[in-house]
Length: 351
Ligand SMILES: Cc1cc2nc3c(=O)[nH]c(=O)nc-3n(C[C@H](O)[C@H](O)[C@H](O)COP(=O)(O)O)c2cc1C
Image 1 (cartoon, rainbow, N blue to C red):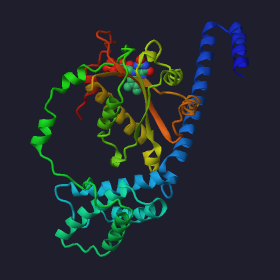
Image 2: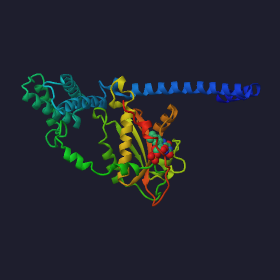
Image 3: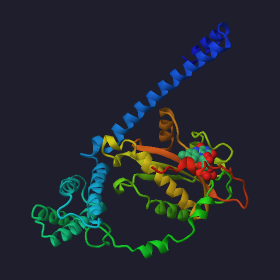
Image 4: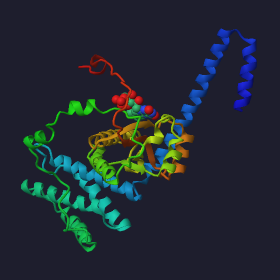
């Protein structure tokens, strides 16, 4: 089909003036791009329908878990306000009880359920101070606790969920370093020390740091697939269009994705890209803080390429690929692109 179109275009070019030929070419490109865009949106729609929790939240393990995290986070948030309203969040607690019981029945317990109970304990303590009647909640909460005790999940670890008291002094002390230099000295690195292996310990430390990234209701969709095997890395890099001349020097390839099954509503259809993008940025800065260089590698692709990457890598279909990241140790001295920035007045607008 493409060949026929190309031949017809050549034939038409011979009959038309250069201006008309130019106009015709432009019309053809617009038609082609609109068609590809429509196909890409259809792919996104299908991917979100199949991969997100929109339809899966009633039965799927991760999606029920995401709904639990979303609901217990609403309670955590409420408890973290300066003056929480007594008895607040009844609908979130109802969701926690119903989804918690469903999760126990379908999948048994897990750490999220422990956090649900921990959060509800703080909710109960707060509401007791305000003499709120909790008869509707207590028996179901205790039943959930007993189920977790029976599964040996309750009582051994620290309390992680609920709220935590922090101080301005402690936050200021931890954030005191001059971050402007830290930001200014991060460059997209396109030369790596090809001999240096990126140590597993550094990879894990960086990902752990990136896990502190904010995410919608703390659902943590950000995920990393790390590849260190050279042959595998080169095979995957061959599917990406922006790493020529340096990708093969990287000691590590990261593919950053966002789990769609943690998103639950039509309104969250773009959340994977937002949370995934934030997670990616944290990871880049975490790597920078550990002395490693990295270069984002765009995954701005049409459906065929996305499917090809998933087939070649084994990344599950319900992950949205955010970007690849070439990572490696820095050479002694090397050039980077200056990449000058816009003036502040282009970027900052007071309303
Ligand atoms: C999402 C994203 C995709 C990118 N893709 C590529 C790429 O495919 N190849 C590349 O060499 N650089 C890529 N970059 C790097 C940008 O060119 C770079 O961040 C920009 O020029 C600013 O320079 P700096 O990172 O050195 O500050 C990408 C950056 C982002 C954020």
